[in-house]
Length: 125
Image (tube, rainbow, N blue to C red):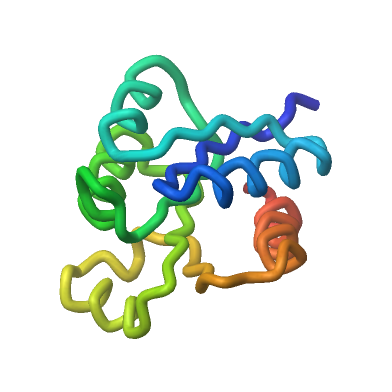
């Protein structure tokens, strides 16, 4: 079975690297980039099973990138990673609540990320 490909988009290089190392140690294929433009470039060049999108980046928001990801790949799992409270209400307001697989609140324990991905596997995604 092919490794699940995960794209990590986070402007915090340390967190992005930590997530990539954790995921690769668990058997996933992880790529990372620090912003929306890098994610756009990677989206044009390949496909991913799961996206981990930081909500607040320098060049665009996670919601803006979420819309682009959904246009490119409506079936991929997308998690917003954020320290921003009230993100659920913002997703509702923007009519994007159904566009995400979940929200991972910063700071988070590594086990939480792995639990979310295990739930996807169990659901056959």
